[in-house]
Length: 91
Image (cartoon, rainbow, N blue to C red; front, side):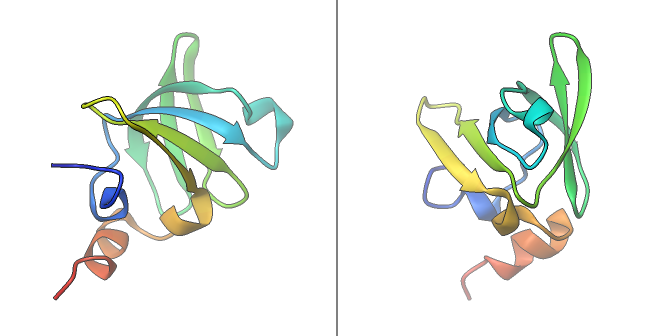
């Protein structure tokens, strides 16, 4: 189960997200559901369409299924999803 403590080890697709800060001021306040993730970006489905947001120099607020919210610096998300997930698995 995804939680505040293990969010970096999980898939982000389908999570509700809000961009808190971004290097591009036009990206701040973009919110919706993550529908795709690449090494350097996340694609968010918004009420107006889709927005691709760079991970670096952005802070994302995720709302988890069971209610808690967590702010994550995008630099912690940089890298391919597969690699990020495997790096954070405790052995």
